[in-house]
Each structure stands twice: as structure tokens, then as C-alpha cells.
Length: 189
Image (tube, rainbow, N blue to C red; front, side, top):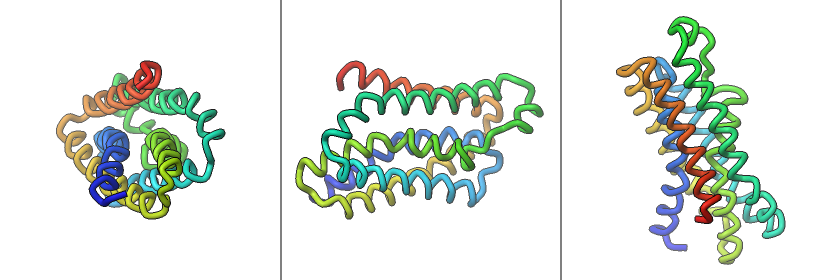
């Protein structure tokens, strides 16, 4: 695989992570180095590991997971998105006190898994093309980490300017990404 193709693949796989990071950054106030690092590290790690898992798994396991992967990603993104919308619709003080930090705990794990499931299929494609996965996995992980970092910072600026509406918008973005994943699979593309 040439470098241009590899970087294009990495950027394409990082787009969902960027959009989710944008939504997460809009919810955080203020965005700190720790938020950027945690989200960037975990999204990059999961996005880098999934191609390796897909490459190692083989066609049989991937075909079983492919039947459910879109539903899993949709459910995770929809749950987090609906929670963000719920928080934005209620009292501002109550929402700030009960706010979930998307850069911590199970929320971070769920977002990391949801944004990296497509990298699993990319790893399988690399195996079918008889391409070693190690360099592509590293590049995919690093590009995703960089895109995530930028998304969190940009989302933080949007969140500071738009306040509670940014949390509502972030939740809607997560729902839209989940629906896009679901509908694109159901439509067969």
C-alpha cells in the first residue's frame, strides 16, 4: 500500500472520531489538556487496534460481527447522544452537576468502540489484500489521535460560544452519526 492510499484510508477512518470529538469538546467546559489527551489517546488506540484484530480474526469471525457491528455502533452513539440532549434540555445547573465527562470511564470506552468498528473491517480488507497490518495500524491510530485532538479543541470553542445549545447539537451529531452507520449498512453500501 502506497503512502497516499494509507493516509487517505487513515483520514477516512478518523472522520467519525473527529465528529464525535467535536461533539464531546462542545460538551466540555473548559476543554483541558487532559480531555484532549484522554480522548485522542483512546480513540487513536482503539482505531489502531481494530485493524489488527480484523486482520487476525479472519473472514469467519468478521462476517458474524459485521452482521451486528452497525447495530452496536448505533446503540452506543444513540445512547450517549440522547443523554447529552436530555442534559441540554433541563436546568443548566442540574445539567452541569450531572454532566457526563465523555473523556472518562465507560462513556469513553463506548465512544472509542463505536468510532472504531469500521477499522475492524479495514483490517480484514488488508488481510484479504495480503498487506501486513502493522504500519497501517500505527498510521491509522496516529492520524485518528490527531484528528480527535483537533475535534476536541474545535468543539470546546463551539461549546464556549454556544453554551447549552452546543450540548444539544453534540447529542444530535452523535445520533446522526449512529443513524448514518445504521442506514448505510441497511442500504447495502
